[in-house]
Amino acid sequence: MSCKGTTVLHAWIRFWVLQQCLMLYAAGISLPINAVQVLLLGALGAFPSTPLACVSLCVRLSATLHKMPFVWDSYYWCLQTDLVLLLALLPALARRCSANTALFTASRTIRVQLALFYLGAGFWKINTSFIHPRYSCAPIFFLQLLASYTPLWLEPPAATLQLVAHAAPGMTIAGELAIGVLLLSSGAMARLGVCIALLLHFGIALTPPPNDAVSFSVASVTRLLLTIPTGTSFVHTELVALVMPSATPRSTSTSSSPHRLRGTLPAAAAVVCGSVAARMVLERVRSHPRMSNASLNPSVAYFGALVVLTVRAVIADGGPQRRERIAERGSFYNAYVHLGFISLAFAYSFVFIILGVQDLGAPNMYSNLRMHAGSNHFFMSTSFLQHRLAATTGSAFSGGVVRIESTDSLWFRQLYPAELTSDFTARERRFMKTAGHSARMFNGGKARVLGINSIPPPAAMPLARYSLHALELRRLLGEARQRNEKFNLRYTRLAGSNGNESWRINGSGSVVDLEEDGNGGRRCHVDGKECTADEIPLLPAPSYWELKLVLGQPYPILTPEDGQSELHCFGP
Image (cartoon, rainbow, N blue to C red; front, side, top):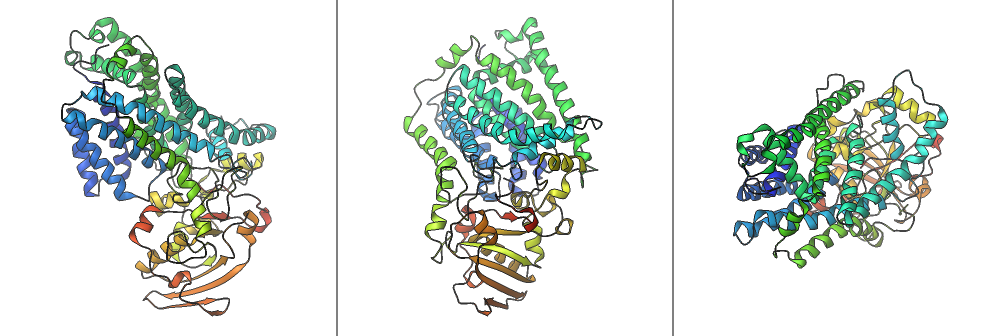
């Protein structure tokens, strides 16, 4: 295969353009920066070039930084991988190396970054709550797929559903760790890691609401294509030769009739797979509450096609054209730049969680990992700074843990604890209950990232109690005050900062009653006495950077009748 005419960079950049367009289609273009992205992506898709790619990457990175901290973990993954590619492309702008050399340079770093992200995702799931079949997030996904894609007349035996619930956590951990370990390898082992990742993301893409996350799958697989750049270029060249034969140089082998026919099979399979996947998911989506009028999701169709094309790229990447990939590497590679980005990826995947500087957006998605009120990980502590600075005041990590007992604040109730249980179908809930799961789910992160309309209204379910780190209570209070809301709030400021699940749910502490009139006036009492100036509602508002860089999540508390012994699934 020749890279002349269509460079490896141009091949991948078109896949990236499609992923970005789908993301903007879902998010809308009301923001000026999103409208700018649409224009840049249109030009880049039609006329791919290194300068335009650099500008588009800069704007995309800026949009992510603007939206932080209300972003998913996939945004942080893409932020790091796309920044690597951008910096690798800068020498190509100065003609110090070719665009292909720059991409192969970035490919090595990005493969290790992705490996660390998947390793982190698997590692943080090794905790007492995630492996518990009643409270873990894993059985919810597996049982949702089983309930949605098996015939309605088929009712699996209780023993089968219980087996799925017990096996789901271990399978999830093993799969994510295997992807990470394999991507740290090279050659055939790394390509095997890409294939296992495809299976994982295929399951995620097919999962119906309220856990549909096909955008995460599309973003992840698009970056995985960077780990097999030669195969990606080969597939792109096949598609170009098939669709626009005149645009392919005559010297390129794929422009000949036999090779065009060879490219027809994966292209046709991609179209069929995309169409079938989109139709299957649409039928399941419309069966869910609040989703009866849903329209076809183009991201699902694209992901179905992307699976086929990625498999083709994996096969091609291991072929004889691999010699050209090695020849393309050149001498630009800077070991210090590589080490810096790998260190950042390692810190993001492991160190930030240990320190407690990141919760939502970290690679701990759906892990049941406890980041406040003591760690539930089998052999690793979390949130060191929150524990160390709990008794201090004036920082993002001070204030300890609070338990929200009750409130009539509409803003509080719309955001947290964000119970999604009413969005499950009756069949899904029945499968979960039969399997021994609580058949409940919460996701405060979804309300934060996608907005309050993405979750059921507060009246759909009784309000559950939940716990928060003090900074998040300060954030909520500031937001409610900006809306001039009149409300009452009762919370318990737990004694100490480190305990277990029983302490989080039932632990004693100072009970605070707050009454706000919506005009700046407030009455605050602690255990019946007037609050002192260091009580949370009376503290100054957190700084811009504190709110920008640190975002914790609410942990739900079930009813006493449940006898909750582990942290319940609370979303990403």
